[in-house]
Every structure is written in structure tokens, then in C-alpha cells.
Length: 288
Image: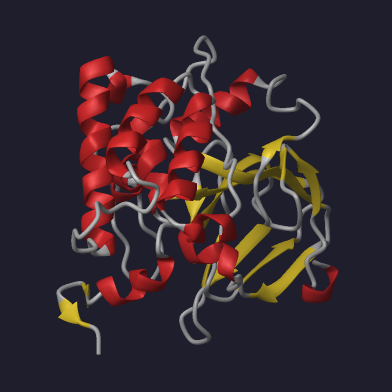
């Protein structure tokens, strides 16, 4: 971090086996002792990876940098300001389209960290953010869709605000997998789904789904044609939705992620080399 000019300090809530390398687990029981933070994380509806409280002292600067290593191909980082001041300025964007704003306490912010971004604390108090990295899923991206959009094209938020109550408690699921290990086939993906879902008390349901999806350990019966990545993930999700409806019809009303959200999150890392080829259209325009 220092080499990039990043001078913020971290209190890790989850810790991986290396820098941005999973599996991730609760660091020193900090999440277990923090029910409100668990609730905030669960309200995002995803499986969490690297999570921390990040501070930036007065006059501190995080110089412009890009987050582009393999870890970020399937992940985003959400910032939730816990303590800040109006003179903490965050900037992000391309060279001639840089956008600057002061993030507000209690709101969640998502930005494209593949673009250059920087922070400067010109105030007299320390800035503290809760940050969480996660692989997106349908519930999370629906939340993003309803949000306010800053930047060159502004958009008002739609729908109701995402409220959380301290009276509630919630479980969170951490990424219990290593990305590279998932490349060995559907058996590794199945194991990751079951291990992740078990943190939410959904291990048995996950085993039923993955057994139906990957019965032989390679995802295809003898002589059967190999499904495309999209078809493979679509079938996995169909089985998860079906199982969720059978075992818990009200699962979509829960605070945190359910079986479908776990499946969608892990599946993003399934056969990633084929993912780019499937993204053949963005905004209705064909990508050449």
C-alpha cells in the first residue's frame, strides 16, 4: 500500500491467507462481537471477502491508483463512512472526467475502482470507513440499481431506502474458498458452495443442489455434450431457486444472503476464462 501512496490504516474484520487471497475468515472474533456491523454487511445480500475498518488521519492522502489485479475481476468494494468530515474529498474517474465528492456518514458507496481514484483528508478529524469486498449477486445488484448515481450522468435513486435495525441480528457468510482452487472443476465449486452455505445453516440444502448439478464430479454425464458456462451457471441457479422454494419459501425476505445468493456469488468464479466471451453486448451495443 505504501508503494502506491496509500497511507490509510486498517483494522481487519476478516483476514485471508494472504493479501487479498482467500479463504477469508473472521479475524480474532471481531465480527462475532459486532452484531451491528454483521447486520450492515448482511443487508448487502452478498458473501463477504476482505472486510475492514479503514482510517485516514487529518492531512492524510491516498494518492491516485488503480485496482486491477485478478482479485478485482469478480469483486467490488463498498465503502460505508462511519466517521468523516466535509473536507474529506474522494475523487474517481478518467483523466478528463474526474468526479469529486464528500461521502456522507451512514450511506453506502460503490465506485469503479478500475478507474483512477484518490482520497484527501483536508479536515481536522480522522476519517473511518467500513469497507467490504464482495462478489456480486442478483440481490446486491438490484440494490445498486435502486441507488443514486453520481458522475457525468446523474440518476436519482428508485424504490425505498435500505433500512437496518439494531434490534435485528444477522449471520454473514465469508468467502471460504481460494479463487485458483475453483478452477479445478465443478467439484471444487460445489465444495465452496456447501462450505459457504453451511455458515448460514444451509449446508444440507446446498449439498442437494450441488449433488444434482455435479453428480459425477465433472458436471457432465458420460457422452453428454459439455454445457456452456452460461448454461452451466443457469442450471445451478435454477436448482438453487427450486431448493430454496421447497425448504424456505420466505427466504427472499431474510436480511442476509440465502442459498441462491451464495450460489450466484461462488458461480461468478466458475470457468472465468469463458466469462469475457459471454459478455458480447454492453448497453445493447456489440463489443468488437
